[in-house]
Length: 320
Image 1 (tube, rainbow, N blue to C red):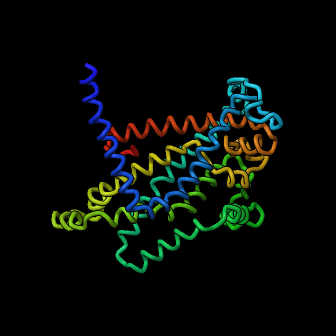
Image 2: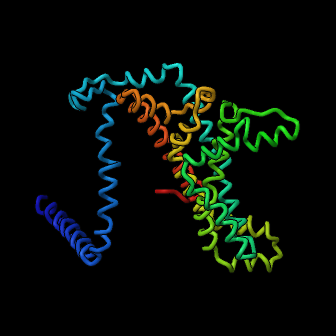
Image 3: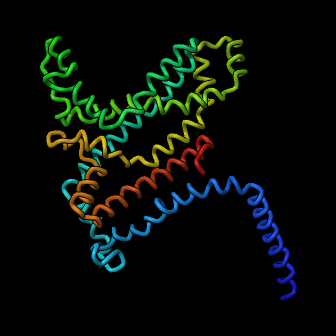
């Protein structure tokens, strides 16, 4: 029995050694490419995986003087405090609604824009439309909020001037909780739709032209060609980008919200990311906000896994 086990184990060890040697030879041949990977790999290890060590402060009463290891362990007390707080429902509702409406409204618009750009026959007008829609992406968030403040001003803003000319009364858009989400999502669409459409335009360029010719011969109209050729051709790209969007569903860039936020619209503008910033950074409650951030990331991970699994079963396209 021992000799039999030794006979079966030796070939497996040799196979493993041969695979390792082949891998090392391939890496030696392409050493320049692997050297290029060192910087991004180091960046991920240092700034993404390294900080995971500090997640334990979410379960501790962190004291900077004692350090992470020296701080006392309190378990899930921070999570219970957050779930029992009066602002938990408001923060969760604002975060979910802003992200949900952004996904439902903002996600299809770059796809439509890419279809319009590719369907414009004039190369000149196609390039002009692309340049016009790309430019807002390069404008600073501070400048965007400044533009919104000027244009939506109740006293001097051109929007309210138009409302007054039509017989209406001025509206305090930037100070209204009811208008906050509409302004935030609308300005995000205007700023990002051109940049996000680049991937779809590139995907449409890769669709086989013979399919369009065959559709024309069959008598398909332009809308039919878009529906039956263009959209199916970019479905894998749409699915992948949708999964990636769902993967950070609970994350909202707090910079723009913080710049737009004031005491009058805080009922609609207070989200988890802004709360973590104001409570964790400004007030120094590191353990408490670490627990909130961990809760936020856990929801993102669960949604990513569920959507990826659903996409793999329905469309046979997924991240893994």
